[in-house]
Amino acid sequence: MVLILEEEFHPLSQNPLDWTDEQLGFLDAFKDAKVIGLGEATHGSKEFFDSKHRIFKYLVENHGLKVFAFEADFGESIFLNEAILEGNTSQIKDLMLSKMHFWTWKTTEVQQLLEWMSNYNHGKNDEDKIHYMGIDCQFNTYHPIQVKEYLEQTNQALNGYSKDILDEVVTNSTSRYASLSQIEYEDLLKRIENLIDSVNASKLQLITNSSLKEFQLHTQILNVMKQSLTVGYKSSKKEYSINYRDKYMAKNVEWLMDYFENSKIAVWAHNYHVANKPEGTGGSMGFHLVQSLDQDYKILGFSFSSGSFTAVGMEGEEFTSLQTHTISQEPQTGSLNEIFSRSTKDVFGVSIDDLISYTYWDEIFNSDLIMLELGAVYNRDPAQYYSHIKRSHFNSIIYFEKTKASVILK
Image (cartoon, rainbow, N blue to C red; front, side, top):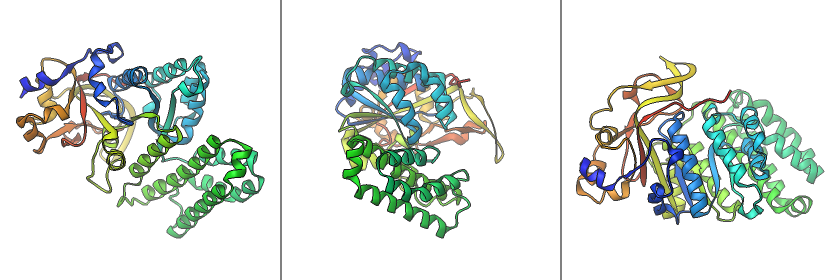
């Protein structure tokens, strides 16, 4: 088993930022994909973040990727993307601290990535520049303001019509729409849909007074505003019969493909979101992307067995503070982590597609195989954070025997 693994794996050095193009050559298997999902087994491991920085750089320089789409708020990403496009590297950290919602991305590792993207764009033509975009839909902090400013500049009649709708979205967003009744929620949802229809009916005038790209961007802001209303309301009411968030994130990736005229995209999100997981209440983002893109979507997951990471603590049912946690226990017997930990290398990439060509590995992935992965919260019991992994979830995995915690921006 381990001998077969070592015949197929691609050894990597401990520091991802030191990975050479030659070491990353195994990713050339993804070169024809239109979208590449880059996962993470925690939301707070330095090595995962640095890996994605280095991988995106490799894909940009060798395979023409143009967009890095994050599991981050769509509206907030517009501020950061403008700075990156204009090469305003000195603004990146302040924008991260002032605009980003999630602590997960407010790290020195992400800062270094965004600053590299900004520096990369220096002196480039617009068509050669790279972009940072958000695909998530959990907040309406910026969307109503962005729509209001656009309509003020382009169509006064629509601006007046939209005022009460946008004000109501803002008023109820602080509670994530928990105070709305079902009837009130459906009424607000309908009013947003009517506003979207009105904006689309005024397309020619709005394009004349701005541009096609500005029109497309702001209609998408309206769509994400509608998505955020639904995700927030359903979450506040604990209605989880449909996984709206992942469904919408997949739609937002597809919108980016159209908006950037079929440019290649990398997606940064948790392993669960990028994975092809049909299980649960409608499937993961990756499942929806596989349904729409098939072989044009490829997935790189991440795994680890021990070390430190950043996460919100949990005591019983109560969340505690954001802190550094450490896993020192041996990986669970029979897990993919336990098998990987027996390897002679501490860091490597391996193609699941290649492994399952061996009968032994094919049988392993068809059994009740589990893998360690956790999100933004940790209760200090690693046994609770192993989940089932199937051969279809990822095309490849990068494994670290041990990780360090991400560094939160101050």
